[in-house]
Length: 304
Image 1 (tube, rainbow, N blue to C red):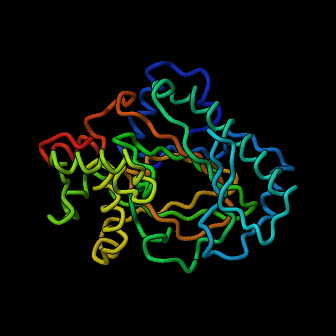
Image 2 (image 1 turned 90 degrees about the vertical axis):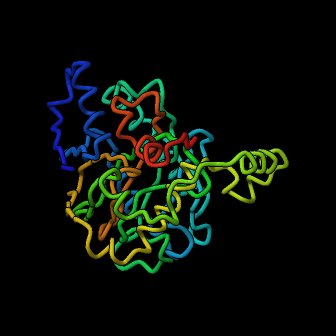
Image 3 (image 1 turned 180 degrees about the vertical axis):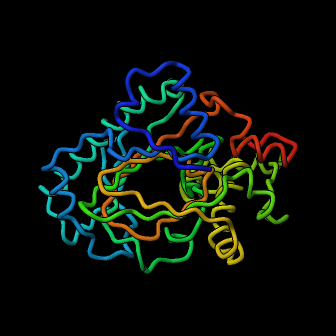
């Protein structure tokens, strides 16, 4: 994998071939990096965000904005007043819209087959946070959602470092296809749903248990990706000995990466914005190298 820098003067005009090439590089596990962000964030909004700090890091890792329902979650209600919450919601709404508009043009092959997911604001210092092992950002991991299965859609994330001076320090490892066979032991190998399992999950969804028991929602693919996320964080051999590549993203920069493909960790940094998209398998320009197809090849069966 590599970090591919893209300057603002490379953004226009883009040919259909260039759009597909950006998508193909992302799907292969590269990071597309903008030394100068293409997302305009008003200075007054930046100053407001830089003035925010959650008081208790055990409450939430970040503040989430759900654009499809225009709602915030994760706000520390002990310190935030209604006016501040409304202002933060407005800033996150504008940020989500700006990223979506930019990527709709930049990653044109995806625009008809992706789902807008959460945006987030990450105001806390990443270095030295006291969090449970499975929630730690400083351990290398691939992303999976405990309560929001993707059914094979890929997790694309766009980041902004909005700290006025500090870098946001990442370390990444080799992409999913290169590590999954080496680090996935037999006990977390892809599991194909039996007829009985499918019937039980269908019954559970029918009577509303999926809200209380998230695993009922999951396909075999999502089940594996969640277990693999946990396995990597809990595997000291992987954390110590896997290939590592360090990148320090400077203030005012942006980058995007498929975080279900690239094992990543955030070692240090404060104040970042992020927008997530779920890219459907039908939109991919190289579907054969997606985690879903890699796992289905291992399992010899459909996993969604």
